[in-house]
Length: 291
Image 1 (cartoon, rainbow, N blue to C red):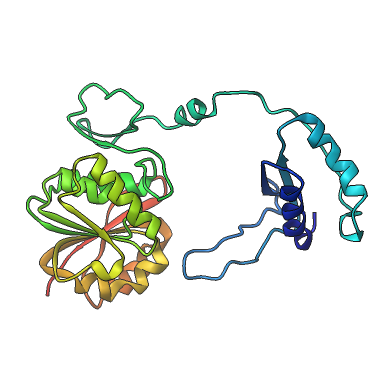
Image 2 (tube, rainbow, N blue to C red):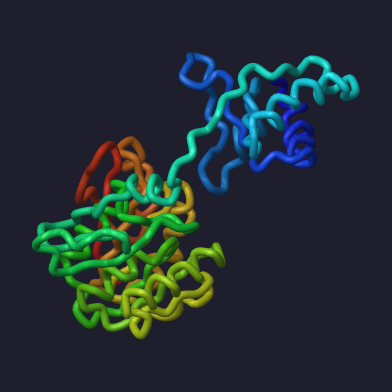
């Protein structure tokens, strides 16, 4: 389906009773597949796929089967569209099915991230209870794992910690769990701020974690953590380093192996950044403040 028709068709399907509409790349898993979104701060390579498949969910098979007849009655924009497949969706416990995809995540033998519906694993002495939500950070991504592992091996006892780009608040909570005196968790996304507040409260760490928009970061910190992506990390170099006390630790993630030199160069005027860990093609970079 041509790109220019996708939005018009999606809106029309919702108008005639579709419960949901999703769009997929018709060339996915072929040599013509193209990435649609770029990194934050960078324009997308294109606004939509060259060819798309639109999938609509209806409450019953009869309603879905009538879409073909409805298309044939539309104006010229829909004349070239055809229904390629109608299939039933099995009646399942979708909540339980979704939950089954998220198992406890081991950070160290004693430190685990555990969804609320799971029993605690044996030997889990330090635990964060965290369910999937709107904000990034459930402990499954390599960047999050490496940051949490670093926190566990460098306990920020009584430290003042800044989690810049907090997402779900998982790193802020990890710092609080390992002894931080206070954690400022900031994000440009208000949903992430709310998620951090809710998760901190659920883990009884809200007294230690102050969540807010980026302007809530103030003063100097013993530890500055930012798990974002390479492009914004480069732009944020002077800001992040400017929040570091003398001798403070800087922990950066969201960086691919091939981007290491770019980050080293971006931070070279301020500190000596180096690779501290690697997992599945992602790296963790750290530095100590010298100012």
